[in-house]
Length: 549
Image 1 (tube, rainbow, N blue to C red):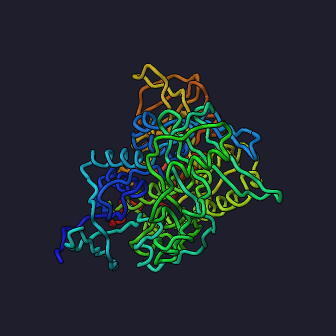
Image 2: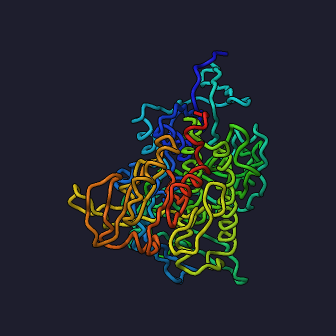
Image 3: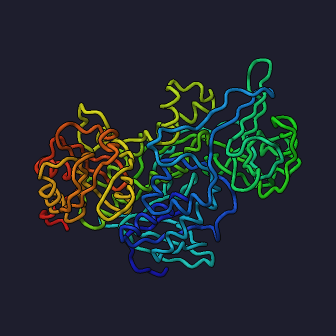
């Protein structure tokens, strides 16, 4: 077996989660290899829903223009029961949220992320399978095998398993994957129809029997193209894996989830469902692909062990209700990657990588429980008010309050440590002849200290932050509306519309917010002092003079 030169991180799996992890790592200058056993991207529109929080992540990565040009908007959902229209769901968010809901075929998401990764000089190693690994206190030795059968060993500092529901990384790491499978089978089809329903709306049509139980179901999600949808529906008996001898009833690892081997539905199978459930008479055409699939709900007992971690479907699987799966996995990767990058640089607090499990596993548990509840009882069973429900589905309420990396909550209004840092607009500077958004200031940066007010301490705070973190924390000053815009260090912006003050709940006196690379508030300091700032930075960083670099 050949022994390859070392790298910092090996990422197993080149789906949206693995590509995100690799791209963020490379953005921090971390050496990375990403391998995938498939020879090419699968041309299937599997995960299609893009949540507003994911678009914010892609904004930080500089990808939103490309995504917005490729995706289609999701305005809401039309619901029908036994042919009668029920309440329409409109996907409406507060005006300060920069992005709405969108739909994009998974193969397009992968194409965009792959091209972004390639710009950093990293290509996917296709037809390459991770077959085993051994870790020790200093790193991980990973065994890879190509399609030709050639094997090599790679020495890495970390291994990230983004290798799906049947993850080899998860199995070899000895993680449990508790849960079960739903008995129902479904079929997917990517087709065009000729109905006159509003563009940008999903369609959910179901039939209920005399007992009120759903016995037939059609769900359509719009895709780019004219009247093109990814449709899912109950599988007919002749396509069920249970009735076919050519399809294994259970996979070897007992995890029943995702697309099944064997024949998918033909166009006439999809048309038969449309004839029963379509809210308008319509004819389906141009079947691009189809499949039969099963759904499970499972989650690991921990998201990593030592220098090996899992993310995405390797860590949690659940019903596709609300398009939470891929988006949750992308946030897993975003959370983990910046922490590994800082640890590799030598600037991390000793427990930084372990905080990945503490922050993300509770999120995975909540998503699994909620999607199972919505799949079995309907979204109307959710006790949240409609506005809160919408924010949660958009993944804008995901947070890490009480976690190991964030400070205590204050009694002030606005985001607390562990909350998402909201965007705002109306920030003026000397050079730009147009107002900037806060996310313009944060895009592509690491930790950022936002100092609000003009108390003369900003320079001292900036110096303290840079000194403690070894130059890894930048500082921006935001002054109240109506104050003069004066050149100074650090850079100064004026909150001309008062949006920052309103959304961040600033007090009468000065306040500072430490924003993490993943767009969450790490600390809220009121009043801000160098001593308090250093104490908060110590949750994440090893002091620059600690000798750990």
